[in-house]
Amino acid sequence: MFGPRVSAVALSCVVISHSLRRSGRGTPSRDARRISFAAVAAIVVAVMVAACGSTTSPAGSPAGTGGAVVPTNAGPAPSAGPTGPGAPGAPSPNPSPTATAAPTATPAPTPVLVVSPLTGRLVKPSLAARHPIVVMVDDHWDARPQSGFTEASIVWQAPAEGGIPRYMMIFGEGNPTSVGPVRSARLYFVQWASEWNAVYVHAGGSPQAKAILASKGQGQLVYNADEFRWGGGRYLWRTTDRFAPHNVYTDGTHLRALAKVLGAKPIDATPVWHFADAAPLEERPAGAKMSFAYQYNKIAYKYHRATNTWRRYVGGSLQRDRANKKVVAPENVVIMKVRFGPLGSGQKGRLEAANIGSGPAVFATNGKITKGTWRKRSQSGPT
Image (cartoon, rainbow, N blue to C red; front, top):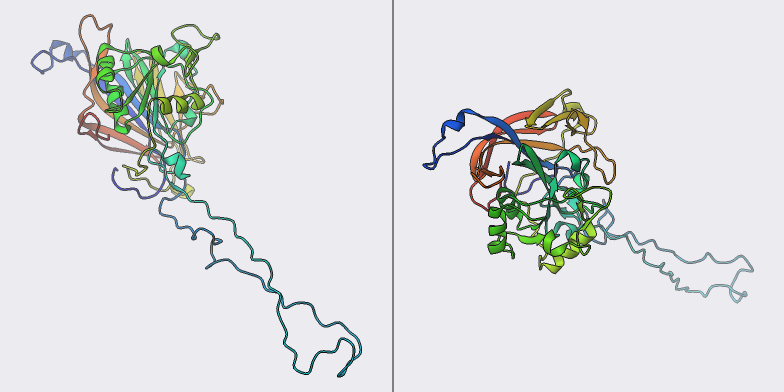
């Protein structure tokens, strides 16, 4: 699934995880008998339809031609009148006709497009080189509906604590008009964000997350963009239509400005994954669906054959982006099975995750659901 680029369709990921407590010696304790299901979800919201391997004509040449066609004009025809030598306006015995060259037509330049490293679709080079920006987003019921899904390139979802999950939206070429509510960081989310050396936007976090952001948040793993420092209306703000802590918001313009302030530079836009063309309509099966549950939340995906997307349902209702009312419908969904366990006393129910390693996965794309394996070899290595 991963490797050099081929051609373009979106990627997305949902992770189902076991909650498993570990003893001090690294083996399951008696609490391991109480297994509950949670989910880590990554959704590539952007739709990818163009082939990365498609050819274009050279810049300055119309597609399908070897170059510009320059029309010619032989000049006006001789006027009618008396004929013969010496007649007014008669041509000389040995005329030397001349042609008047017409102006050279300037062809429209062929747009130069490259592959987006996050979504695989063809975009302008400036968009492909944008530094990825990650935003942690609340999934408490008081935070719904959230904003930003349909402009994100990838969205992860995983448990945070108390059975309530959290989203991590990754923005590349998208330009969201609103993102939020912004919430706090967790160590495993930082490790997923570090795969892109992303600007990591959050509002506080667990002690483990804050520790790694303090030591490696100046570009070593990610760029630490904490609302506690960069909020107050400069790059993030609190709205009055929701109550705290579910009211911190931002948007694409302010996120890009913040990335610049933090020193996040354009990236090498070489994709790390394979991308493939969407299957033609006649090859897409109908009726596929899947679901899983957090402690307080049931997620379902239903395949929509005409659009080749997986429509997302939360608690039985079709999910929509609050910012633009569009349906949340990724083109691909990946469900990863990951072990989660409590960090221990005094951690407010926070979790740790065995997200570095490998495990079972389910891949849903082109209307088909296939079993496979996920793998992440190091803290900042790609999943």
